[in-house]
Length: 207
Length: 127
Image (cartoon, rainbow over all chains, first blue to last red; front, side, top):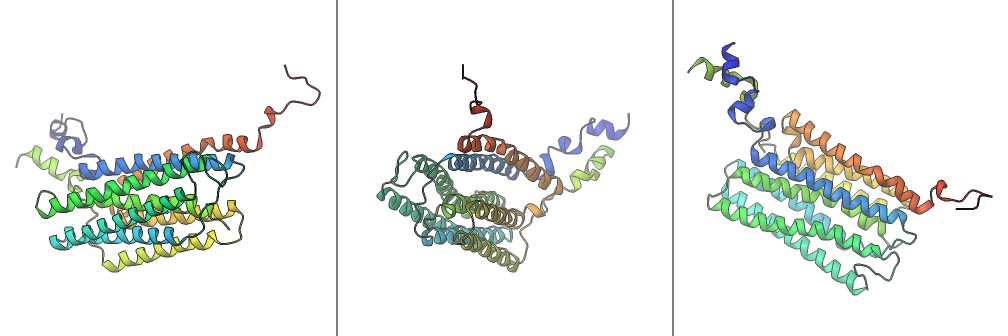
């Protein structure tokens, strides 16, 4: 038996040295696995939405204006850029810059959530409920609130995570890698919105 | 250093331990990707107001959304700068799950149109 066999015990070097698969950090691998699982969750919701829409004779088209959803999209896309700048500053050792950009990202998230709630209240005011609405198929409300509600839950969770991790980063408890992992989650929330907007909103515009 | 320790350090996977995604790209690149994402998002809004059939709108919007997701994954989430094996793992695994999820569409069309075998044959009295 050679010296290499004795050292590695027949296993790949990564297993011997305790390195995680693909040589990425354990935190980053964990968030990517979460993102993959979450992508499947959102995809299942959107497929179910399409399934219901395809089988419905009169699918509602309740959206009169795109202004609100356009502003929400702009805010969320911009928040992805600010998050990126925050992580970049953290990696460069600029602690105050990283904290500032992270908090700007959190403010963008709060603004997005407020706009989202305002839109919900508008639709509820027009008579849309979970299992009934004045326009057509009664399941529209359930599917709309499920998809947008799940996304809003992710945004809310992301804002809380950004604030908590940003503050702890400033106090030295977390480092740039922790901000990077939070950033990956935030970009994913933005990525999901790119699919929600066209399928849930833009294909249901009243024309 | 013992021979054993030397072998471990020289092992290729150990040498590649450092993550490649370092977030040192110039800000200009991030801004270009950001503007591209805004333009693609705006394009979806333009398609929404076009006079195409809903199915044609859906196809175009889906392609644009995939392009947006690709840009965000590659550059904002730095997947392009990660190790090739990791990138392939994420893309292939996620892609397989998302594609496998589409198996139910035929049943959706059956709900809408009715499958031929559900219709009674002419001259045959249902049991």
